[in-house]
Amino acid sequence: MPKKKLRRFKENLSFPNLFQYSYKRLREEGFPYKGQWHADWFNNEHPLILEIGCGKGEYTIGLSTHYPEKNFIGLDIKGARLWRGCKTALDQGLRNVAFIRCQIQFINHFFEKEEVSEMWITFPDPQIKKESKRLTHPDFLEKYRLVLKPDGLIHLKTDNADLFNYTLEMIQAEGHRLIFSTHDLYRNSMDGDAPKIRTYYENIFLEQGKTICYLKFQLNNEKTH
Image 1 (cartoon, rainbow, N blue to C red):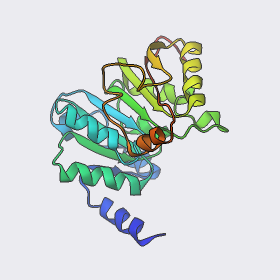
Image 2 (cartoon, one colour; image 1 turned 30 degrees about the vertical axis):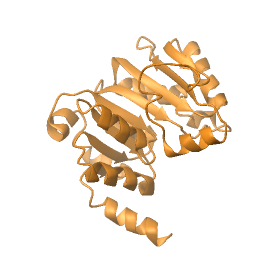
Image 3 (tube, helix red, strand yellow; image 1 turned 90 degrees about the vertical axis):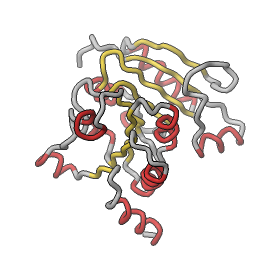
Image 4 (cartoon, rainbow, N blue to C red; image 1 turned 120 degrees about the vertical axis):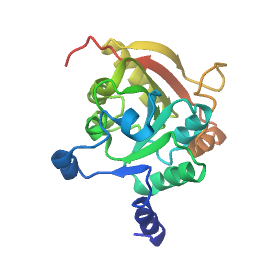
């Protein structure tokens, strides 16, 4: 493993805004801030926003600077990428930001029912050959439903048209509520946060002439699984 990564993994252990729990520890001890993020970590009742598969936390950081009256948490499994987000948040003195290193399927170990107000899924791996691993697969949507408030929003930004179309199909098939969608975000004039922040890879995609797809929806909370 490159020395740079090893240094970052070591430094991650010292970051107060990064939580890393093994599955064994979660099972045996539980996560202390589950259901208590507002009271015991952020020390306020501001809405809690998650970025799923946050990478370097560019959206988490960007949104947190736009909305100091909200709390933001980025989730990812890649420690070297999370290092960047954690360090940036600390360097900028952002008190409304935290990060969790975990696999997305363990999200319910970290958040209580209806604890989350909103989710962003930004440029996830489209998992073209593995439908069950797509972050908008019904199994993942069910995990999100358990932690989202009944009127909670989910946003998807992707450069992959197949994942975008797949998600639209899932929304229709599962009876979820589509609020907005576009195959070309930057050609479609719109307000909101989707066009405000561009990640590093998003800029690369745009330079390559790719279009950015975006959609916003709410889950069908009457659906049972």
